[in-house]
Image (cartoon, rainbow, N blue to C red; front, side, top):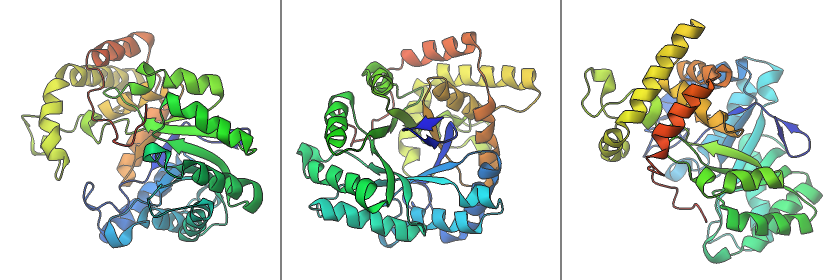
Length: 337
């Protein structure tokens, strides 16, 4: 699949939010070996791009995800396939970042953490409230593409249809196209469809990237409001607070995911999880999809989604179940209209 004029990527990509996040995902440095295994396995399976951010990491290890991604690419067991993975990373419009040069510096710092001279796609992580420094940030990113060669292209994240045209126009005036927009998209978060963003991106030639296709694990089929087995218990941390209500409201959808996963497993002769079905639904919307991986087994399971083809009846059943839920998942607070 093409992003922009020439960048070729797999339909499935890997998001690295959990790599360094202690609060939500319980990251610890002892996990780094498992994360390396996850990287190696999913690259071996054909995934060739990873998404990160300069804000991914907790406290003193902010930027940890980029550091790990750079290290895993250098130390991978897949030779050139691992070394040549494409990197998309996001830059936070922090209030202390003022002027074009602040964004140029942010790109340089990300390159240093990643251990590479160029990042394929640099994305503005969210649109600053009130448009604070937006023009300067876009100028800085465009300058990194045109003059410095530290970025290959520019994208945005959490950008709604109203903002999208303005940003695309500004970048076009600077001689740099807007190539991507990364937003929350899942069976319980269909705002990209209902807002018209999906069609808007298609019309403008901007590649839509869906993140959180499993709604922080809600749609994996691993959890239950009333667990019959220990493995079905609620997740730890902040998710344990919001999951009981969401699990109750999505019982019908969860049942449909289980039914389709069982049917697909029987048809293909390969174990297909509800998670793979939920991810495959997102991919069916002709978007790129980001998944999270923390170990090799998760990589194997996510790779199944890339090769899964749901039939029209299965897609319709999922559409019908999820449509009644509306945008059940809490939207990212940085998502703009």
